[in-house]
Amino acid sequence: SLKEFAKTERPQSSVHWVHVIGAGVMGGDIAAWCALKGLTVTLQDQDRERIAAAQGRAAKLFARKARNARDARAAADRMTPDLRGDGIRHADIVIEAITENLDAKRELYVQIKPLMQPDAVLATNTSSLSLEALGAGLNMAERFIGLHFFNPVARMPLVEVVETKSVSTITKQAAYTFVGAIGKLPLPVQDAPGFLVNAVLAPYMLEAMRCVDEGIRPETLDAAMLKFGMPMGPIELIDTVGLDIARDAGLQLTGQTNLPACLEHHLDRKELGRKSGQGFYRWQNDKAIKPD
Ligand code: NAI
Image (cartoon, rainbow, N blue to C red):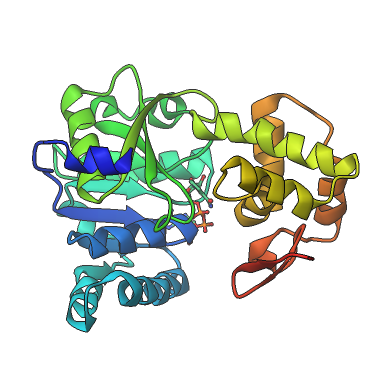
């Protein structure tokens, strides 16, 4: 567990400066989390507005989680917006969290490799792309690893550490100690579709929607799984993840080709879950409104 892991003796993390590329849902929140935990952070995006939005979310996180206003300000000062990527040269680890597109990520790696410190680690937050394919021909496989954070970053304790055949022991150690140093629990996984968590979650979410197709109400199903001990019901989870992402993951990871009718129904209406304000549930202030 995270509590037990936090108590274990580990070598000091060699990571002091984190450079995050991609200030979207994930990159912005990973950057904020690292700044909260005392690291120097530069946050790069090609879109100035995404960085500004990430800073806004970060300010809320710091206000909520820092001990006092002074610490919150110090955390904000540790996180620097970086449109041009100046931080790459200084970073001990570069975390790539740009759009989920193989070619875009590969192109970015080619650009940044010559700028990085010779021993810095390059980590990708990809959820579905093969690291083998992402790193092919880049000639830095020993320093390339997956750090798969979960959404929302501030609430999810687990980070999957995706290992390839070629990654070095030093890089693996750096990744594990870094994840521990920011208060998360590293889980070693292999470079396989869905890694571990999503490979299990995809069929679970599809099956829950098939139950809805059979006439079980979403709120009944969610309540039952809460009683079972899950922190969140499967339908609320689908709304939280996004129905489009649940569709893609479901099709890619299970090999099933026909979607649950209830999912198609919402997708046709562009009801994507929490992010669009309506999915299986209506959402208000990031909370699902469930019928009694
Ligand atoms: P997003 O679409 O919210 O953010 C991507 C950001 O990357 C955008 O702000 C975009 O402007 C920027 N970007 C794209 N190309 C760039 C480039 N060449 N240089 C600089 N910035 C660039 O995407 P999101 O959801 O944050 O996903 C990012 C990565 O994290 C993806 O690989 C995704 O698979 C992974 N992931 C997403 C999760 C989620 O729940 N959304 C969960 C876990 C992993």
